[in-house]
Image (cartoon, rainbow, N blue to C red):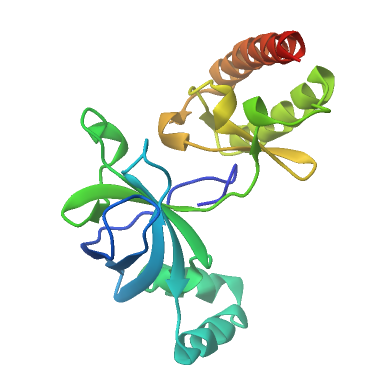
Length: 217
């Protein structure tokens, strides 16, 4: 997945999970099929409120690293062909696995983990727009970064509809959009209208959030 950039990898996989302890902070050893490869990873649940979300580090052997180095030297066209057969070698070192929750079947059509459909995503390290520390990003700068993020999705003919501040992460000097299950394809005019409406709504929420933080302080 690219972060905003955040497009889920397509994988039909069966996963075995061994938990060393029962609480969410304990280590999990995970194995799953991705393409023609078996991927091993270790990590834990994201938190106690989202037991269906696992944050994992992929375990790779010296042979795996050699193969990855070889693939990266290939022309991009050949890399694309190899990726369609062996996608596991193109995964980042850190991934997030999001398993199906009841009532969300439309968002999880192809992926399975431990007999449960799931998405394999890349991990994004950032700060949620609603969880900043002072001094917070100015609304005008937040809007500029949001507009850039939406513009990236627009290049692919996509609109985004899950308008919550915690879905917009501050990463360096940009905003990264996560939770892309609500992305859809549309016409340029409809995407432009959706973007304008959603950006206006986001900025309104952001300004209310900043006002609330100021009052609490």
